[in-house]
Image 1 (tube, helix red, strand yellow):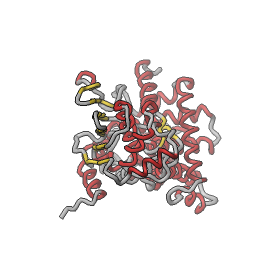
Image 2 (image 1 turned 90 degrees about the vertical axis):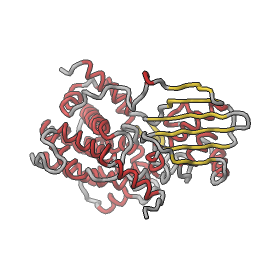
Image 3 (image 1 turned 45 degrees about the horizontal axis):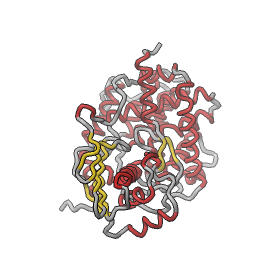
Image 4 (image 1 turned 180 degrees about the vertical axis):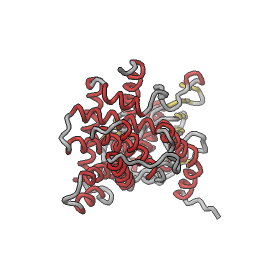
Length: 428
C-alpha cells in the first residue's frame, strides 16, 4: 500500500505539471507577461521593451506564434499579447484574438514600437517586459515557470514583489519522493477517479493535435511521410508518425491546445501519444491506458526535475524515454525490465541537443521514440547495457540523476554556444 502522503504528492505533481496550453510555451509566456502588463497599464502603450533570457530567445525566435497565422518570434509574441491577450487565460492567453488584432500586430512589427533585448540572467526562464505610455510605465517580471510572475511595478511603485521567504523555485510540490519504484507502485494502485478528468483531457487534446498534423499542411509533413513510406509498417512507425505530426502542427502555429508536461507541449505529446496509440492498437482497456499515462507522465516529470525546465538537452529524449518505459509497463514487463528500458534509452540518445522550438522538433521526437522503442524491445528480451559504461550507473536512480547533471550543468556552455550560433555571434 502506497504511503498516503506520497500518493497525494504524486496527484499534486501531475495536476501541477499537466496543464493545457495553446502553442509553444515560450512565445505564450511572453504574450502572457505582455498581456498582464497591458492590464496593469490600463491603456495602449506607446512603446514596449522586452528582455528575455537566452533560452527564451532560443525557443521563440524560430517558432510560429499560435493562432496568428504566420507571425514568428519575440516581437510578435509581445505585441499580440499587448493588443489582444487575456492574461486570465494564462497559457491560453491568445486563444481568442481576432483577425483585426493580428492585422494591428503586423502594422507594428518592424517599427520602433517594440524593442527586444537579450537579458543576461542566471535564470534560464526569465522575461521582463516594460510598457510605456505618455504618463505611465509598467514593469512585469516572470521567472522559473511559464506563468509565474514574481514582480510588478507601476511608475516605480512596487505593486507586487515575491519575498525571499515565499520564493518560487520552479515547482510547488516536493519531488524528493519521485523514484522509478514509487512511480511503478503509484501507476499500479492509484484511484482512476482521481486522475480520469485530467487524463481524458490529455488524450482528447493531444490526439486531436496529432490528427491535425496528419490531415493539415504543416512544416515538412513528417508524420504523413513516415506513414506513407511504410503503408504496411509496424506499430512503432505509427507511434512515431502521430507523435511527430502533433509536434509539427503545434510548432507551425496550430491554434489547437495540448496538455503540456513540465512546461512543454512537445514533452506533453511525446509522453502521451505513444502510450495512447500503443494501448489502443494492442486492445488494452481504458483503465490500462490511464495507468500507462500515469507512469509515462510521472517518468517525464522525474527526469525533468533533474534537468530543469529549459536546457540544451532535448526534452524529447526525456519524454520518449518515459513513453518507452510505459510501453514496457503496459506489456506486463517487470520492474527490472522497465528499468532496462530506461537504461537502454538513456545509453543511446542522451546526446540530442535543443536548438530552440521549431517544426523540426517533430523529427527529434520521431528519432527519440525510435531509440525508446528499440530500448523497450531489448528490455522485453531481458537485454540491457551494462552499468558503469559511459554515463550509465549501477542504479537506475543514479543513472537518471547523472543524465540530469549532464543536461543541467554539463551542457550549460553548449546552450550558450547554440544561442550564439542562432544569433550569428562571431567567434573569431
